[in-house]
Image (tube, rainbow, N blue to C red; front, side, top):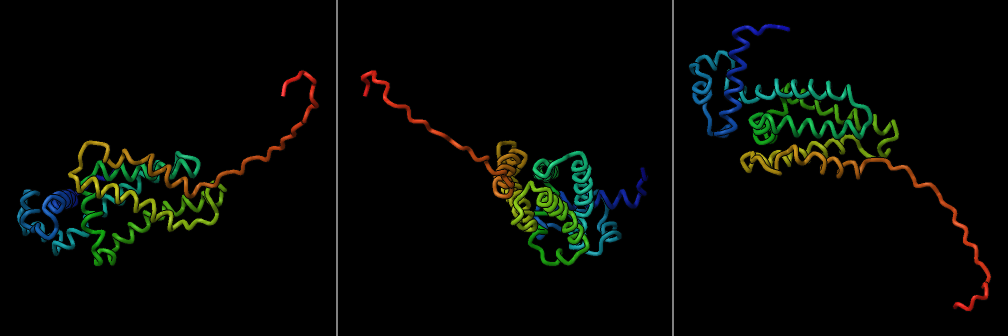
Length: 221
């Protein structure tokens, strides 16, 4: 276990403060001074770590993506079967976003539509993270659990896109503690996705023989 230096700890505090400020006030309406006040440091201190407000914004997802990826990989190591792994991925992403609403807000409502973010190394890390879904789907095809004519990248888009829609809707309503919580949508989403990609075994053929008996003369018609 490594012990973080004072500089690393302060950087983490700045990022957490920025995550909160940008989520609550919106990135465009926030200033470096707002972040400095939330952190309890001066504006100058912020600029010692980040050259601009945009760099600060782009740096926020790095730790969250890495932590989420490590947790998911750890869980998948203990799960067998493609179907179970797909449910685990849906559950993990919904749970992680729900437990980290500021991170969810920054990731899905601010950075998702920022073209400059797509040019960063952090965005490349995100793409690598989502490859976990593609790998699981490909394994399911090879094992015969999933249909062999599906596109793994399209399946990934459906899974990730559906989760993001559910999370954004929840965020827009102010993160209420009700049935709209992302975690409550895990099984409905899982069943819907699996219904389209799971390979069902064919029903066995049944042969029926019907024997017509002659009239026994009991008078019944």
